[in-house]
Length: 227
Image (cartoon, rainbow, N blue to C red; front, side, top):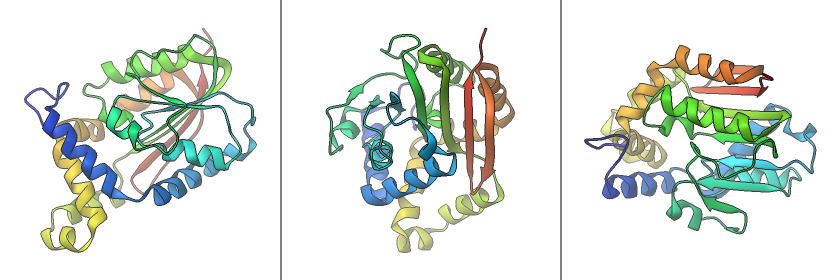
């Protein structure tokens, strides 16, 4: 987010970004989006008794999608108390920094990140910290599923649309996206420039099972590397 120090954005910048996030799409639309993503990587075949960490969970769309798929043991973690208060069910979530997970080693079956890693202020340092923590908490048979923004021709088109004032006035979702980008431009653009480094970090901590880049997103599914 916009700040003299990207690692410590001002309270007003955080508040403005969160307001834009909340109007980007409805909770129902967010849930449907997350459900499509999970289904695309075979989540319907995951064990229903799996303990799942929903990291950078925001207002809980990912957890609701997992509940719809039959998973009951889902714990959400996010750094924003405001976004966690937006959840319909706050009984299984906590405020936490995903660089220091308050979770026992080897206790988790699946970790899911849908649009959180690109908010990290430093790459690769903070990314490595998160991935190390996720690998620590996962069982040897565990899974990490990641969906993050990725530089593709489609994303370039979206960015150009964000620069058109009329388009932003007509399309509320586009204006919300443009606003979020404005308030975290340094970290967002640093993420998009760091594709090879990001993939190296993911593959250093995890054994790649599936990867896909399309429609401005990276989809990555991996298992912890066994030392």
